[in-house]
Image 1 (cartoon, protein in one colour):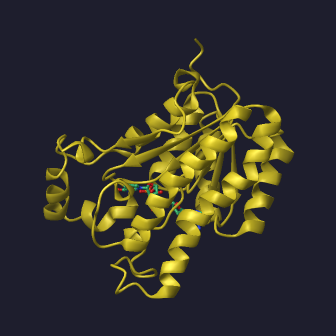
Image 2: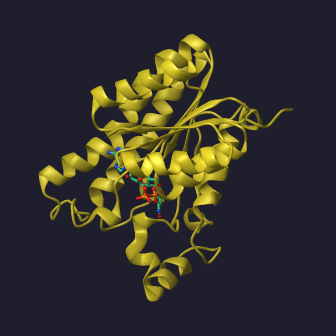
Image 3: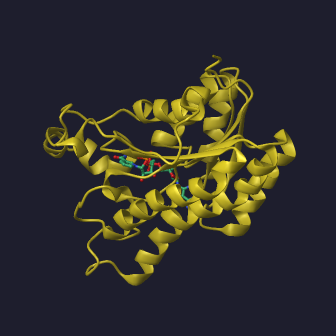
Length: 258
Ligand SMILES: NC(=O)c1ccc[n+]([C@@H]2O[C@H](COP(=O)([O-])OP(=O)(O)OC[C@H]3O[C@@H](n4cnc5c(N)ncnc54)[C@H](O)[C@@H]3O)[C@@H](O)[C@H]2O)c1
């Protein structure tokens, strides 16, 4: 079985940082054409340029996933250039590193405006990207969507109720899209990472005590690297995962197992 993704066009949102950046890197190594989509256009371009310098085919797209018009324009641009989209990784989200801009707190302490902004990016964003790509994938008769949720969507965790609600919603959305669209050749799955060493949890990663405490909650005793999450996206996109559909996969070092 050819497990590589030669020539597949893979659209990754939030690809200028953390797990998204690791994901475009790993897909590119597997021979895919990668679309580096991020609301930070310059950082997306920098990431795409690094990949092109390494001999890969990469295109940067500046897009705010919460902006329906911008999302449609981004997919139009990609289809205009490459003719198709084979894989969508809905990875972009705002989380704990944004606390200065968007309050990560319980429902009592989250201003409605912030609640709505977090939902728009973390839940409406993946829905808009899926809506833009599903009819095209259906026409192709093939496609893969991978949603990046979180352990926050699987178990009760305190301190970021809007974020947590979006991740639970994304798990549900994964299942409903799979139920409706898989008969047309589209597989839809969801990854739920535990703590991953990225800028999103910078406050924890850069505080040795906090990092130790978070690591201690996981049977493996450490945070994940972004590459360890990216590897699961590559697996789910590949023919090796041909019968994996509608699945919600914790990649959390065993956090939700105990
Ligand atoms: N880091 C963790 O511990 C952890 C744990 C569980 C789940 N996750 C999830 O993993 C995914 C990746 O997170 P990360 O840790 O790499 O975070 P990160 O903050 O390093 O990267 C997020 C990227 O998304 C982009 N982004 C944010 N809002 C956007 C928007 N409106 N439109 C387009 N791009 C936007 C940012 O510019 C950034 O490049 C997220 O869905 C996050 O919720 C992270």
